[in-house]
Image (cartoon, rainbow, N blue to C red; front, side, top):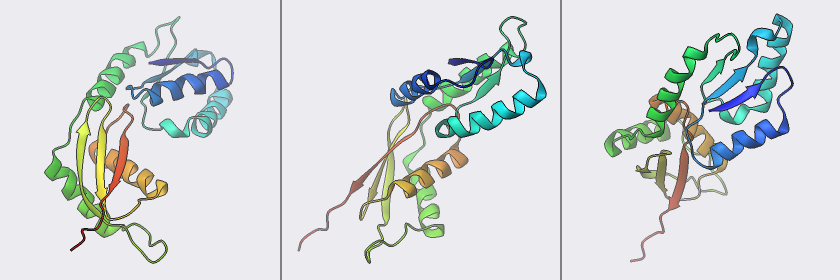
Length: 175
């Protein structure tokens, strides 16, 4: 859990700490403390600031709390439990391949230099954090990987957990 003091703007240090949590592959819940001290206008601007500054962790649950009054502190435990459950979850390979098959047929990878890489199959290699290995016929671009991650989250949740997707390109067999 990362605790951010909202009486000031989100600091570079806050963003750096959050990035360290993400880079280490840990489950994440963000708690915004002193929320009760903000007026409506500041809350509105803070919401925009959070959307802008923390766009890379929209998957992390958040709790607007007040440690001094105890307001919404009870929301932290369910958020942490949900994040830890996602962090430890596993998707069966059959279900994962059916999902990627649907995605690839509905939204194929863009054609680049006359070639269109295909997703051949995928598997979940590990949990804590969930790591997926996608076997493809060619290089899959970063934008399409983000699309795959977003769709994985929409379908299977993973609230509060970073996801790692690695791509292995299959070499063509020589005859």
